[in-house]
Length: 120
Image 1 (cartoon, rainbow, N blue to C red):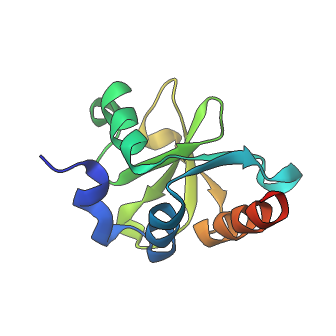
Image 2 (image 1 turned 30 degrees about the vertical axis):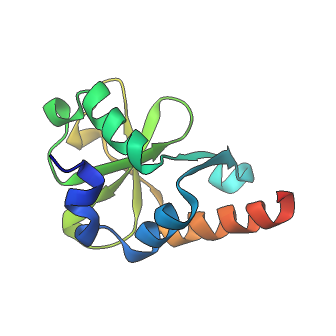
């Protein structure tokens, strides 16, 4: 059985796919504007989907791929075809609780890459 990332790879934003395949996730603080960000590696995507029983609470439109290190997961809205990032709380997890968080994943990834260069 294929994992969720592999099954949906062709529907995910290209910049995200390139990022996760190049860096295999990331975790850290990106400052006041972007905050604390956790980008899950490919294995954690499936573990979180299964372990948090996300299929019971979220429709297949959402692709959770990280968190804010606290109570919200980061997700893409697959039908939109864009790379906007939404927050969905873990507690009370449902489609109706999705809220826009970042205009684009590329904004977050660019900040991560910059941070990696500074601290790397």
